[in-house]
Length: 428
Image (cartoon, rainbow, N blue to C red; front, top):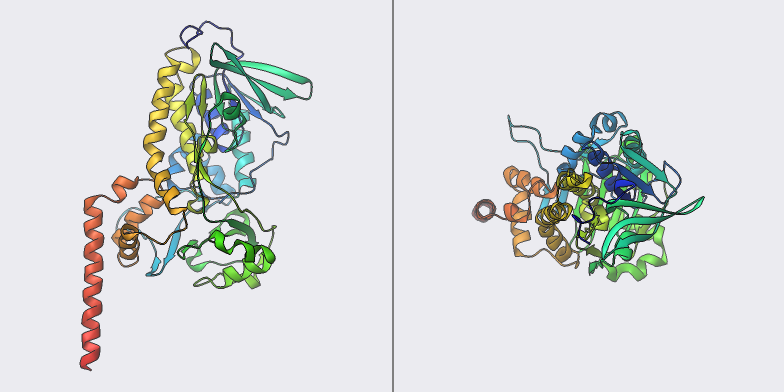
């Protein structure tokens, strides 16, 4: 049975979404605004539930989605901090700044998931056309002739079947929908482990986020709402045995040793030190017959880049744009899903490829050395790197011939200036 052959089927909803986190709630809102009847399922019963292990940062590429969802004023009111950042490298700090007389740099927000998740979930619940069903974990799929036509869920009253034209897996990297649909994930080893904690009264240089590229170790500190700073360390796994012997001591010592280290000893830690020792990157086909995946269910990046929240919102938008009409029966749903799948691959596969390569915990390669060193020496190159780090441009635009030539010229000038200075010193 194809999608067109099942168009006359009696569905409970047009779309069932499993997972009422960022991706699922955003998709529910955007689909419902297009006239789609949505059942938004959440396995947890608490409407205030949130994801704890997260970078708590939204890249600038997600700002248009936040704006379309109408969340920007609420985030500002909640105290979300604009996602400005500076990055430490062996060549010094890369500090992107707006060009003189030019527009401000694109930004989104750093915001704790304890603030963000309930906010967007509440907006979804208030959106006409969305039924938020808490305490509804998916325990199976309804399938007809090889096509998914609904889900089976567990409720306080027993099992229930909900039929829909499209089932959306927004249920994280270990997606139950993907498991039941038989869509496996491709895994990429991450040779780093990570731990994070939240602090108050932890001032950061310039009041902006900091990331340390220590080759191969990494760390970051992002200021968030409520005066809380999220501080994370991501060392090479070779350091894991020693790190585990004294987690708290190792965490604090790692931070103290950072260049321009935040004054962690005078700060107040307001959370446990939490993390993961094994977090591979993964990706899976973003669609199957009657099924689509968004957010981490489709793809997880290396957490050191802080891309997951933004990609969750963006993939939700791409899906809504692709299937908004066909999900109501007005068009070919399979063709719409193919459009979504192509968009997802086009926008994210390049980023994922580079992320998986860097997750090997290797030193910078020659091209990275070229771009990072030039960005530490030239504001124009730093702004170009900001666009890439914010995922507003992809790898091909980031590493286009003009950008590479400019970076080379910057480094040649720097080398020439250093040689001239050395010759003057010798003359003296």
